[in-house]
Amino acid sequence: MSLTLSYVVPVHNEEPTLERNVDRLAEHLQRFPGSRVLLIENGSQDQSWELCQRLAGPRGTITVEAYREPNAGMGYALQRGVVEELPRAEHTRWLVLTAADLPFGFTDLDGLEALLARDEYADVVVGSKAHPDSVVQTGLTRSASTLIYRGVRRLFAGMRTKDSQGTFLFRAETARDIAEQIKSRDFFWSTEFTFYAERAGLKIVEVPVVLEEAQRASTVRPFKHGRKMLAQLVSLRAQELGLK
Image (cartoon, one colour):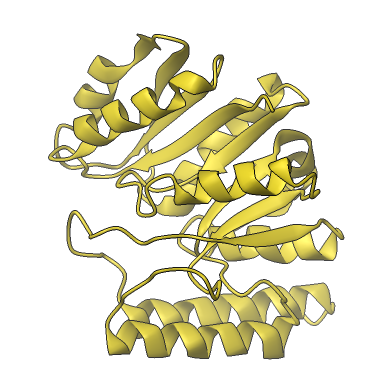
């Protein structure tokens, strides 16, 4: 089985840990020749952009590239990475959307490889914290808000995917039409991606992951961001029904 990957990595104030994680990623991807790592710096207030530039270049069998997105926000970075990659993405290439701290290590990629080894087809693979075999330890507040939001997604939008905030691995050709529809430029970007992928009838498979120890405190505030994402979800559903 031969895989070619393009990792889209949002970079926002990641100066303390970025070099270590890029080195780790580049080393792991050596067995996937021709793969790329796209570092998308977005609105950092530290020296992350200068570091991205220094880290860019060939690394053995792969290439690290640096892009600067002026707007801060996870969605801005993900959208920029997809837009940069899709015009040159070969038919067989998989795009991987992850975080700069590689929260699941490479267990999400292991899940993709296992799925392909079984000749099981998928358009989108989600490294899912909600998979029953995942090893995830989070605080009570975060766990409760996740369960609530999952139920709301199901209730208001009929979404079947249990974790719309995991890592995403998908065939390049499946993302072109979806990326053009996404309006969000914050944490809701991946939920919107999942929403449109389901509506397009794409096969989404969630795979188990192991959540590694956080390298820094999370910037996600469960209730604050949860309320905002709920409003976005209701708005998205209303647009679909022609109510807005």
